[in-house]
Length: 248
Image (cartoon, helix red, strand yellow):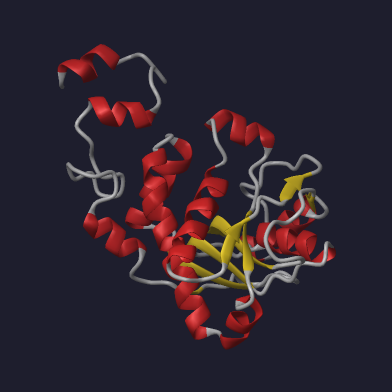
């Protein structure tokens, strides 16, 4: 153990992880190798398998949904480090995976490309106030902002828009079936901020993980009710459903 690590041992949350990275020898969140927080091999895995990954059953109103990778292995470890352990330096790699997924999806779906060609907003699914407060930031909003910048750099007419807000509390989604998640989230989001850029832009929805699709479907409903079409949603990862209960 290094001197710095010894000094910090037993002192929870002594410093943000971004500062710790400057003090302690960094290691990859996905594989543990010494070096960058997301090594070249883990970044390659994050961007190697963008694909349409729709949940089953697919909730009504869910946009065409693409993810960079299944939620397992290095991708899962990287996302957990970013969301739950404050490794905000991972945002750049995760946003790169989102932007690459968006480009892949648009090149594969002419309808979505036509809908977004005139300009589109990159809209994050918002965290609850309690979750954002506990984490010290809104992780998906950060990813959406960086992904929008990456898409702009590629010449696509993208701009970030944090237009969605939670208007009522929801219970913890863990352990809920698809139907229970949909009921829990129904009416929980609303468009409360005016859009920037083109009037009534199309929206590209962004989230970190898609499980049942209920959250993305609710976000799409809120945007559509405000007159904003939502032809496409992208996520970093998609879970693999393993239990019959989850499909009820």
